[in-house]
Image (cartoon, rainbow, N blue to C red; front, side):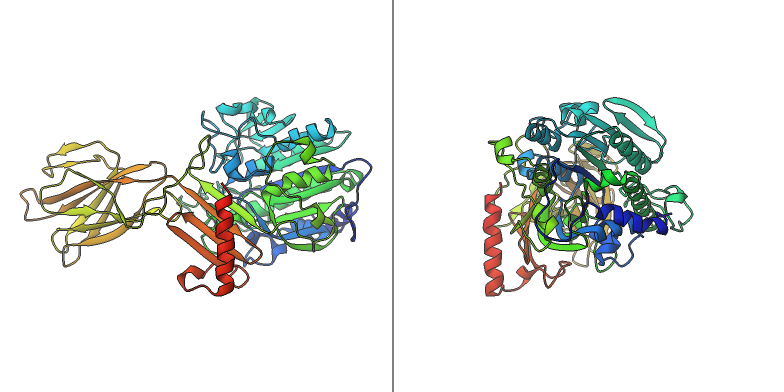
Length: 584
């Protein structure tokens, strides 16, 4: 169950001890503590204080944090986990850190470079080691390339307790790492993060930074301990993800959100009043709600996309130096936490990190006066590979359609497969591969075979198939003219996929025609979005973009580029488009 109602006013009072009613940001004689709480896969539609979701879980403690401090209406993350966390830790855009997609922690693949200056390293350099620092919970910035189980410590944190992976297999049986030592934990992961954070904080006798990154409410969907939530959960095994079979995941997700809220309340209320009064508390999320969970007016354009449902996240700040009960419409990005923490700690970033290009703008002025604004624009991006050389440089949009390469392997019969259109720029925008089949019998059953290149003679068809056995086989019927046109989702895990049709054809000796095979050239992805106070431009790739008026269309239902732009719209489009050209 949530924190007892009788305790909630007390929590509000304790949080407000460090707040102020108005005026410039108060500077304590000694820098205060910083507590950063990060939820996973939680959009503004899931927090009652935002008042925009149609069916949010009860979040009384988060609502109280909002009431005790400042609620930010226009905070942006990146579309997925690792890029957001890299930007929080470094104050730099993804194209600078080279982290544009999720990291595989149990590989030797690219991860957050050790040369990046992180929050704890900045505090060490800027305050002479005044701050103790700990990272608790989910890390998801490491691999064998940057320290494996020691990655959080090598990134600058003197203490780490939590999980390295992006998604744990079970909230009740997971791999727990403490400063490089590994053991299985059967404690509920959300509760464990709070316990670990409190245990570390209680050992400190000076200023501290504690970043608590929860796995919750990220999949796997599950049944949290009943004492932590009030949801009535359906029978059956919860699905492990949006794509998995099982009952409706929403009740389980809401239970996880409510359990998260309960444990955040427990963490804050467990801190001594004097300690909490010297602490600035930040709550935010790494990206929007997972795509199977939003309800109208929100859509499935959620986590993993550059639409508002994917990048617009809750940001609540309360405690030391923060005005009580404020609401801020200023544009704020997760990148800006870096400079904000620096300002709260009294760190001069220009003097402390000379030569380091930072994209972080402090929003500390908004904490004292929510009417303040530090930014004129926000930027988010996603690209297909991490590491040096990324994001990729994409070829420009060609003037004419691009036809994918035919490899032959056709016959018997006259079925012909073509695929012509814009270049296939990967997983954003151009992720649907168009194709056309001609020369087949009318109303014939057909099978589209998709796979890797492994040509083999198939005697049952009297033909060569380029991908036996296929990765995917999809069934269609031709029309009366013996033609067929469609479009197929092609995953981004492989950058060459081979397509070929098998056609039921009674005129052939073995009863089948086989088309030629195509090699689909899937180009890398680099999708970007930029917004100003009113308008937003999403450039999925050089051939595909959308433009929205967020003031009139906050849920991005109407692409302004589908019609002729007005003069003010054209001016805003030009300004944002020009800005995108400088961000690389």
